Length: 95
Image (cartoon, rainbow, N blue to C red; front, side, top):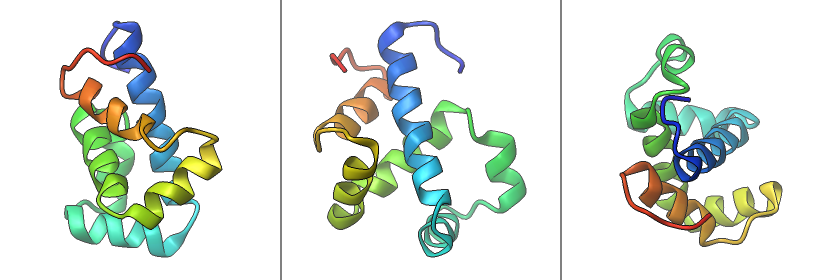
């Protein structure tokens, strides 16, 4: 993780959970990779970068059914990924 702020770290953890969630299904991961233009090597190399983590959250937030599946899987309220995305963008949101 790149930032030391506790809220930023929490946001990065949520984004990493979302990435792991996408990676648990070939179709979900393939769609993310196709839409983002990143390949497997790039994904592995950049997995901890805030920009990639923000893109993962944007992807999950852009598909309501995927968002709810992720939140159910991660046992998170549906607003948490949006708060995490805002925090990654430099906002000050309680997670």
